[in-house]
Image 1 (cartoon, one colour):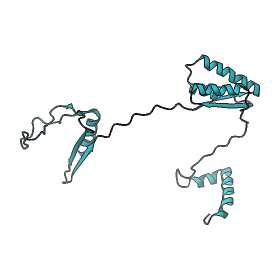
Image 2 (cartoon, rainbow, N blue to C red; image 1 turned 180 degrees about the vertical axis):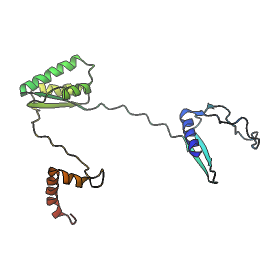
Image 3 (cartoon, helix red, strand yellow; image 1 turned 45 degrees about the vertical axis):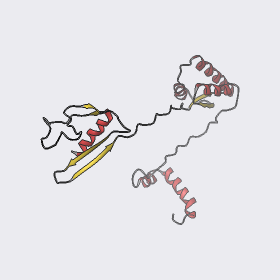
Image 4 (cartoon, rainbow, N blue to C red; image 1 turned 90 degrees about the vertical axis):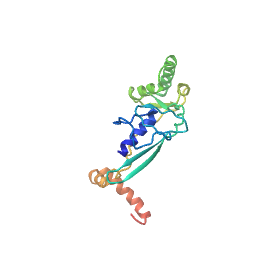
Length: 211
């Protein structure tokens, strides 16, 4: 009953409405309703915000004799959210030569200038997943169209900003934290993991009081 009352009052605060008391035909004759300002809610009514916050009390009378009384207070109104900052996105360019890369940057600049309604994030997705990676690759980054266009000007002007091709490494962090023995399972199942783990231990065990 107490939990149900708390839920009821939280919803009442949220909607600014005092709900009617259910299953009551008439006020109890054992209460002096003529003194004070206590009233029985026979129907729902508005709960105006007349002060800093609304407050209510919830009582629970347990069948075993345990009574609990909780006072609830409406939380303060949240501060206005600041305007969202623009997302920084990469525009990836790739070509077979440095000259072709500069020319591609120029063509992209011309295209996005003629289509100001394009979302920079949509352009970034298309460039990342809709084109192949060739010998010369670069990326320009920016949070606004203006920043990205300025960066394209740098590339189209012949600036050497290409990223050399190389091997890709993937690091999986937190091994062993998901469940007990996870690291032991990796060690036993994967020779590359086992070799790397042993190499690290060989390097650091001599520096530690405890291996």
